[in-house]
Every structure is written in C-alpha cells, then in structure tokens.
Image 1 (tube, rainbow, N blue to C red):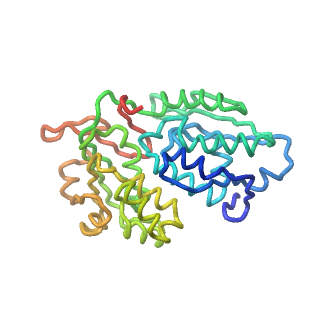
Image 2 (image 1 turned 180 degrees about the vertical axis):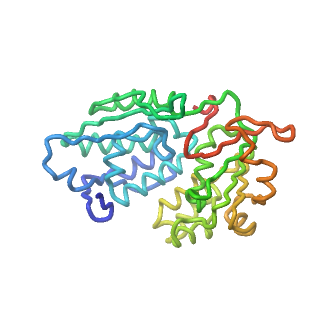
Image 3 (image 1 turned 30 degrees about the horizontal axis):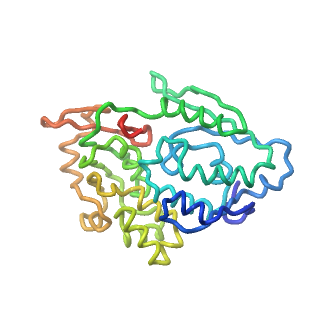
Length: 326
C-alpha cells in the first residue's frame, strides 16, 4: 500500500521557470519529482507499470509516467500537477496526450527516472455491443511513442463523439453513488466538451447532501465556490487555507463552466441558498424530475415538450465531446 505522505523520495525538482512557461505565466512554483521509495531504492531488475490509457481531466490521457510520478507520488507533486492542469483548462487538456501536465511528467521522467528499469504495459478498453468490456489494444514499451499510440486508439474508443453540440443536457446521479458535488461534478467534467456555448446542464441529484466528502473540503467549497479560474487563482494567492490545498482549488476550477454554459444543480438535500452560494443555478428536484423523467428518457437524444435534450443516466460510464473540440 502506497502512503503518499510518508513513503516517498524526492528524486529532483523541476524549476519554477518551466512551470511558469507551461502554465502560460499563471503559476510560479517548482515541481518535485516524488516516487515511492520502493520504486527508487528497491534495487529491482524490472519494474512493470500496468494500467489503462483513458481520457483524463487532469492530464489529458491517463497512464504512462503518471502511474509512477502521480499514482505512486507524493502530496506536493500530486496537488501541484492537478492545479497546473486545472489552470491550463480542462477543455484544452481532455483527450490530448500532449499538454503542459504531461510535459512536466515527461521532463521529470527524462531527468530523474532514466536509471530505473520501468516498462509500461498499457491497455485500451472499450465497450462491446452487448455492453460488456473488451481490450481493444495492448501497448508494451518504455518510451513515449508506445503511450502516444495507445492514446490515439483511446481517443477513438473511449469518447462518444457527437456531430452536433448539446444545447441542453440532463444528467442523472444515482443516489446510492453520488452524495456530494465533489463526486457529482463528474456530470460537468464528462459533458463539458460536448456542450455548446450558452448551453444548460441540468443535474438531477436526489442523494446529494453536501459539497465536500470531508468537512475541511466542504468548508473550502462553501467559502470560495465554483467561480472560475481568475477568481480561484486570486483566492489561492490571497488565502492560506486554499493556497495550502491545491487539490481543492483545482476542483473548484474543474467544476466551473468559466461562464461558458449554465449549470443547474437539482439536489435532494441542499437548499437554493446553498447552491447559489457556491456559484451554481438552482433547480427544484421534484419539478425538474417531473419534466425530465429519467424513467422515460432514452440515453442520448430526446425531445421533451418540443425541445431537444441529451440525457445521460450515469456520467461515470462515458465521455462525450463534440468533434470540433477534439
């Protein structure tokens, strides 16, 4: 079991000027290349990193050096990379194998991991016609070309590509699975690349009763809200509580529409005042569920009262994008 607080070794540090360049001047900190001590000092003849290449909101495409430097990394490296990805912009990163966060990890790998015998075993998994899963590709190697080939296939397999943008989306969050906006904002992450400018995203969330999964995060969300990148950058700079928790700051950016589209939350157990207090629009769950009945809607395109909507029954099972945004 990897303990990202105590089991790490820092192999080197990427200079702040490189992070400044990758963040387009928005960030000004160095980045520590941290890994579990067993990886760096275990004396192994072979280290296998096994995992799935899939679109990812922080690093564009998961796997490759992310497994080592983030998956088996330390708190500071994890949080600073998440924040870099958020500040650069999820819609500029998702589905792209080459981006600022990946550039940071590649820099760290080239400078600090070359002495380690790491081989990456990377799968691409897609859905079959019957709804089951199947391995569509297996890529084994120790270089970036192997990862790039896997990412190219994942883009074809793991995105649901829409030929037209969505102007109104309705997403249902299973009450047994989604209890907070921290988890429930997956509805925003997974759909935003398919949403048109000025679109509306309606989130039906009967089980949601809190913002954060723990009290500390909940308080930060309530205090600073989902108000976009400029607001969050300033809040991080001016406030020690948010500045010391960059993972929370990254979440606040990820779940903001940046003013591009409207997000209407319809929670079962949060008030209108609470929802509007963090920057979302509020919708009455009973009224919205009556109009957009999940039991009657089909996955994908529907027409409700003459209006075309796109319905998603579980945002965790897919990724949606308009072709123009990839």
